Image 1 (cartoon, rainbow, N blue to C red):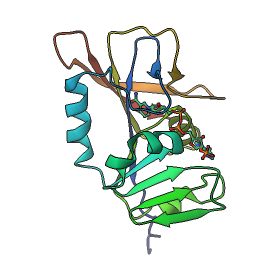
Image 2 (cartoon, protein in one colour; image 1 turned 60 degrees about the horizontal axis):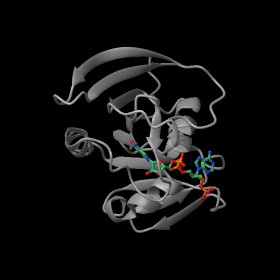
Image 3 (spheres, rainbow, N blue to C red; image 1 turned 180 degrees about the horizontal axis):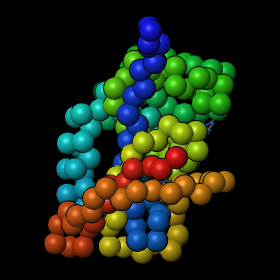
Image 4 (tube, rainbow, N blue to C red; image 1 turned 135 degrees about the vertical axis):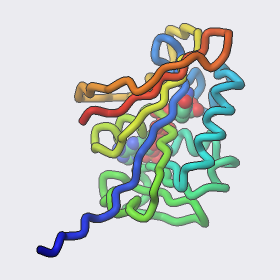
Length: 176
Ligand SMILES: NC(=O)c1ccc[n+]([C@@H]2O[C@H](COP(=O)([O-])OP(=O)(O)OC[C@H]3O[C@@H](n4cnc5c(N)ncnc54)[C@H](OP(=O)(O)O)[C@@H]3O)[C@@H](O)[C@H]2O)c1
């Protein structure tokens, strides 16, 4: 019997730094400046194994200088479907077949923000999640998964301190 070849599926991994109360940003226009050096190092090392990144338009605007150097997909409702600018592709995610768009990549990093994490999660385009919990409470700011409509169960794969100041790194598998 001839086996039917399955289309290639990338592994999707999200990375997020959060306060203890689940907030990922205090200001829309800039990247977090409150996460630890160890978290930044962890993200930097992890990204060296990723061949593409996915972000929302607001996160792209906050980090364009870094993201322009990578193969980056930016979610936005502005393009009808896709709009390419060198290594950056602006994507309207509700009008494009994302599985097909990402199929040539092996490892896709989902770098936020809250709207982009939620969209990828609810569309079954998230396999694993690294959460760095910084020992802070903000009581305000952007939530980690904005506007969710479903509850998702996670399996904890590992947890470890990243430093002696109380930063924890949690690694989860998404249980779809
Ligand atoms: N702590 C962390 O680890 C971390 C990580 C990443 C980002 N951040 C921070 O989070 C903040 C931004 O988060 P955010 O949730 O406000 O914004 P975001 O997810 O970065 O961007 C939201 C924008 O993405 C587009 N978008 C997202 N989902 C879409 C969909 N389903 N359909 C069409 N367009 C979609 C829309 O762009 P249009 O308005 O163009 O339609 C929307 O306004 C920034 O301050 C950033 O620095 C923190």
